[in-house]
Length: 437
Image (cartoon, rainbow, N blue to C red; front, top):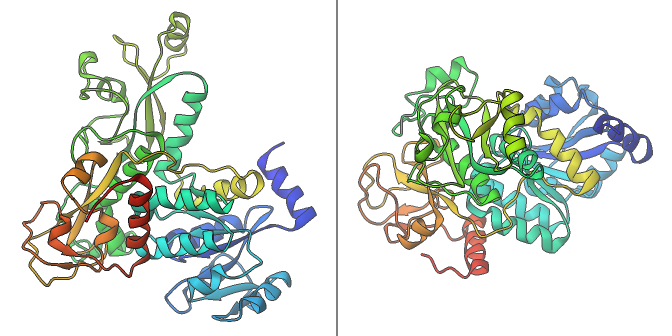
């Protein structure tokens, strides 16, 4: 039975899947619009800190204005209105999570601390949580998956974002018995570690993007956290700080994303990395096999491969981000099935690096801002060097001079220990038996 048919039958018997959405920006608004065209799923409550943005996202998606109710308190009243077919718009994510008439919560803000708060609150409230906030997952994904399992709910990243799309390729190959040796994605913005929102304001305006979001793409932060999440989900670490990031075409992937003895750039196997070039916006995995008949079949089938060595690449040329996310939401609710989560000790970390010289007393601003960017690192190395995970530094105060393009260490910053993400990271380290900070 197709997923559409299952959703249709679910709607007939129990009503559509009721989604609570946190974050009505570019990604969240697109999710609402997509689900309005689907059977069996509706966003019934939306929270955004900007007044009026949640209601506007509904209206842009074609929801009649008389169905939209703005409400910031009384979750019982909100549940009644949802049962009557109304849509809730609020500025309070904590209020949204407490609404009983929700089957699942989707976190879509991209702010690490907000993501940690929302995911934690949803899990504590006994709700499934689907997380598009890779920045939060790269920092405390292991803790969130552990807490969700304890509470009997599902925590998952989404199909459509690069980590989820890579995981789908990985699962396909892994289920068929292939050995997956590398996983990766394309980077579709020029890499400039010093990029700031001010420098990119005009480009962001043309692309109808938030300048901070665009800056987080250009300075590499987004790529680093995405690689960290998929790396931790499948147990693949980067070989070098920041990843190798070779420039190559799609056709060159099976020549480059292979071991050095096969002409590639990697020392070993089971690594995560990214490619610069026309690979973007696609994702890929490199596979191999020692079965002679399978090798002959792969060559006969003309899978993208290395002509001299037994390596092939499964490549998907797109990822549809928020527009695919409903697929994960459906599978979480219908089957209790995640797309991607970290259940093993993390092997990768996105570490905070100084975007410019930082001085004592300075406060770290947002990701994609003016003070820091992320670099993927092997988790064991980051821990041994006492380098601070990127998701923890926002709002922290610098205590010692930090030179531009150097990692930030725990003894160089005073973290805001009142933040939920810092507390969750402390719990994660305790679960893993680590001592940091």
